[in-house]
Image 1 (cartoon, rainbow over the protein chains, first blue to last red):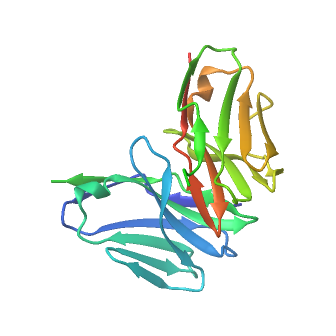
Image 2: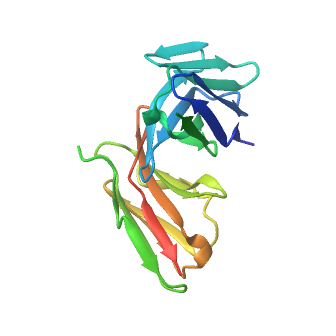
Length: 110
Length: 111
């Protein structure tokens, strides 16, 4: 079936890099996504990667995709207090349907 | 564009009452999604529409839940009768070019 798994919590010291990992099951996924949810708000698209890419970099964000292992990661360099949020990994499966993981709550330590 | 609009933002009701949540997608987006978010179960897809037609409603928990999309600019999610376990944040999202745009959510509390 369709499933996206990610760890629920991550604590990182301010200024360090955060790495959030995710595994998915549908090998036919075309797009893989990272969404960010701040308290009291809906999800916002942070970045995405097309399935024929291995890596995508966007300022402090680096997405790595290992299609063989169905593993996706998000690295946030120089983590700031404003990065504190829930990060959702998601895969696009078919007909516009996107399957979300349960989200990783990123906590920033001073 | 104002983005995806949901109303109400907060709803408190008593068990057994009917609840109707509303969503206005972004103009021109042809797919609309309803999600439910709780701490225990995370983000669950309830139902989604494409060109106003329900495509997949396998996530709708039970017959108490129903959703409609009478036109391209409006959708409702109805719970009748509501139960305390329905308490959650309900999100609506519309999609364009593989990106989902989420509304701010409706926080539902059923007492």
